[in-house]
Image (tube, rainbow, N blue to C red; front, side, top):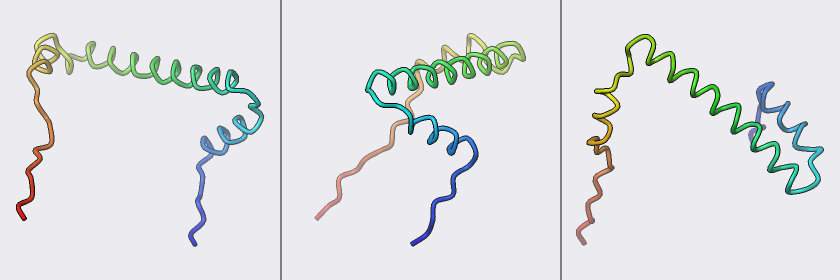
Length: 76
């Protein structure tokens, strides 16, 4: 059996989670992590707007984007 190797961030989170005793504490940690990631995403999106990579036209084109996986039924 192969051992799992955790990176420093994963180890830190495991240590943090080990002291959580209630669902409310777990929810609080999830909220903090979600808020952090949302803030990071906002910063990245703002950078794309500022450097012109993301434009109103590109956002509008997303409305008509269809990237669904084509599924076909297997014939027996």
